[in-house]
Length: 362
Ligand code: SF4
Image 1 (tube, rainbow, N blue to C red):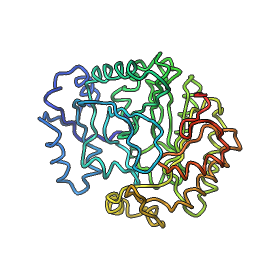
Image 2 (cartoon, protein in one colour):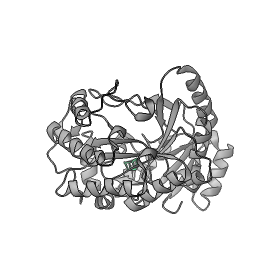
Image 3 (spheres, rainbow, N blue to C red):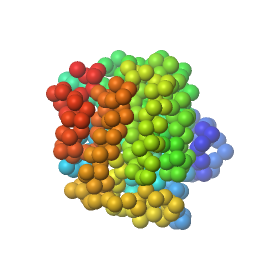
Image 4 (spheres, helix red, strand yellow):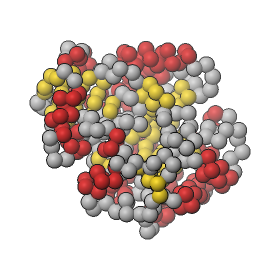
């Protein structure tokens, strides 16, 4: 919990005496605690601060979630990959300049749900209902899957819940190091620990509070050594002078210690964000230059790099992975059918489905 900077803990009255609430409060001993009726009280306090987004990351709210599982909405006009998400924690203690949660979450504090039994029941029903195919499910959409893990140990709960459910693959996606709980567990074949990667200089300038590149790669190497499958996300890929050389170094450093067979998937997605993020990010990260690039507004309303540039970036990255025999692990995140088609040609992937062609699915 060394990196966590929690200033205050807020507890939903409904879960004041829940076992997990008590354990969390023990681990957070020394912080002021306030019991509240709902999240609105916490949001009101956060909104009064000069940097509400930054403040939301330092206030932790213990509560319940009404429901946990939902299909990933992807984005209109793009080819979804059939991913499902579990909203177990909300918000993230890290502070990336490009993070869309700054805009999406509207001052939601760092939120931990303690009604995990309900999640267990939802998952049990889901495992029974979905009769065919492999489904990937992750907790990294509205949070970082491992950032709060030393506090919550959610990863242990999830891994045990997924163990033996071979058609359902759990992904824990992070920019943190490896939480000790993960190394004390017996890995499950359907669990993928994944890390988002960017060049070291980008991490330093744009991903405040996260583990550095070396620490992430070390974590992935340790995870593989312990028997886990791993994944990587190059998202957002940023275009700047010298980007090619920087990304090439990152790709090379993966394969220095991680065998390709242990990598389940690698996603590629270039910078994109909703218009609401722009004023927020410019105010909060005045030194960042990543938004000063030519961007176009796509049909889903988001800003992105122009399509030819995106296609070129993916082609260059694919070339770097081909050298290591990892091209069949690649997929695109939030891209149009046209961009996917062109990409598929590039990596000569001749399998039936465009978005689900991982080697382990064939
Ligand atoms: S690690 Fe992910 S969720 Fe956390 S601030 Fe960065 S982009 Fe957002």
